[in-house]
Image (tube, rainbow, N blue to C red; front, side, top):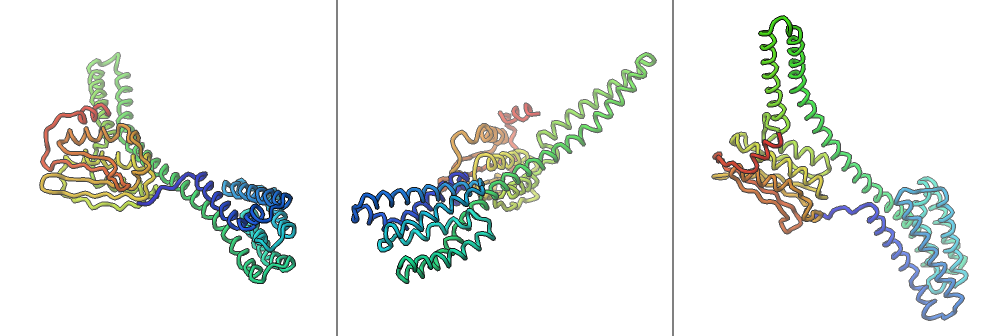
Length: 388
């Protein structure tokens, strides 16, 4: 099972917390010495104040840039962190780990500064920081470590923010694609509805105009036109019912193809299933409703990353099984009345329906309809007529 992606603010908070812990570990030996070994109040206050200010300002700048709240003033924050980290070693001594403070600003260089400026600043820091370390008398191995660690820290900070923004943009793109897929389906429905009603209403209007011309001259012609208008209106109502309920040339293959296309457009892995062309006609409608409702539930009520659709026929039933990995984000009330309505439709067709978490982090919807039609009058039939 693949985990769902948390909200951007949650990811940003995790990144900031992990970075603060890393920096704290970098300065932990020096702080340990000040607290438990040196026992000098002035040095301890300076160490705690400088470290606390550095970590707080670092976390603040990282959070703002993760949230895309960049500002020119952040340069001054980076300069303040650099100043603190360069002042602490000579004031507190370099022999107990305070030389590590010189590495702290490097992780923010490519976060705060534009890319070209960040490259130049990183190059300058790679030269100046070790030189300053030599001036302070740091061991040669520490100076060599700084030469390697500064560009790596700068690159790590850049990649961290870049990956965060990429994930956020992918989430937004997935939402846009899902809305686009729904919009395309609405446009298709609108075109079908226009094709059905446009001609019929135009014909009704023309017949009404003819009847109006003959209303005082030929009662028989008027009655004939009114009968034609009634017939056309009834035909239009029937056609609209067929469009709304999706009964016009309903095909399980078409429904499943549309479902897989919508889910793929929303960013899910979903292969188009194989559907036998010899399926009985009566199974297409109820199983088609299963496909539609399952697609709606995956898009609305889960953070699934894949969906698997299976269609098979056995000795007595045609079975459709739809499984996705979004069960972890569902709650008891997520499904609403959709799944209950599906159960009624499948029962009305004499079939079986189950839906729920499978226990391994997946959510499974399964429906089976008998190969031989069953004359059962159930809630699903009434619900279908009510929808029209």
